[in-house]
Image (cartoon, rainbow, N blue to C red; front, side, top):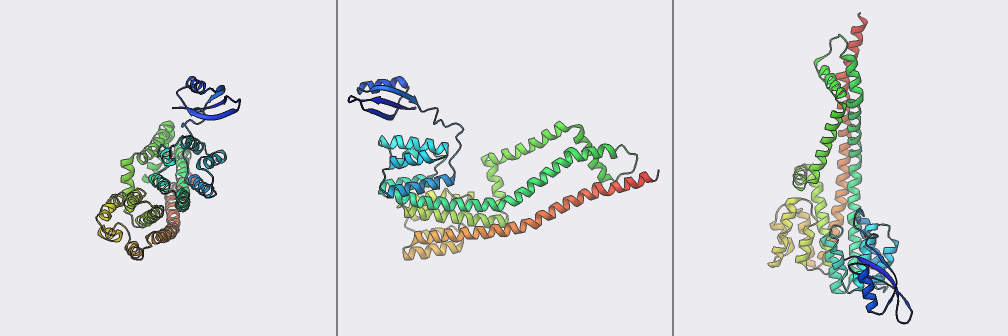
Length: 402
């Protein structure tokens, strides 16, 4: 039901402001009159906090939210008041809506985890499980503290991956843009001139010039086909089945596979460590941690970890039985952590180790990509020189003979 903000006077003449849920303004007025309130104003909040076009909540915004909530709760501030303070300061419209909803329902007796669970596109199973565990154990401020650290680590890791991919993507975009300009504008003009000359042109160059002429004569169709291909490629990545197939293909490549194993190892270790520190039972923690994995095969294997642990096996033995799931070093380190009773600490150290390995692997991969891209550009330029520039000299030489 929509929310309405009202201002009214009670029996003593004191002005009261609050928010209620109702079907419409008429129902709000009836409820207030039944409690002997004199209605002053009733405003609908449906338009202000509408879900359309508000976007999502970024990882950095969720990390900041958790850090502020942890600090305020440790200072003794009631949860609804802490949420209201953050809501007034946030710049995100979607987060403002979520916090407004949370503040209202918490004051009505609901839990924060139940409110956040209505926004599953913004709050994943790890976030919801930790908030719920904190509420049940009475250590919500600790749960938010752990979440803030975990989200910050995830954000830093994703930023490293994005920054490493930025250079090759910029080069690739520049290559596509240059090729589009050449094919769409330069080549058609050259084709129009040179094909009209009565001189001998190499076969390969003739094909290039004829293709350029066809593009020039059918400019609208050519650009339509070009954008259609781009649209199909984007669509392939949007469809889950094709995206999974493409992802599975690239994961099999040696360099990519190594980085993905390190990424998933870091994600799994950090998530499991954070959940165990928050007091989440290990079976639940394993199932939730499996959801953060990106490789489909590894994710399906990880979903069975909790079955082995529930039968009395140690986590290290379960990982050993599932050969190829995680690196041997990780399995042996977890085994040492179980023997010393410091599994959460060991998992956190493993997460930091694999995050550094991801950073090093990405830097090495980028260093290899730079000369490879330069080689591809050189081959492309050389091919254009051979096909177009060299025949031009032949044509000019032929014209001088007349």
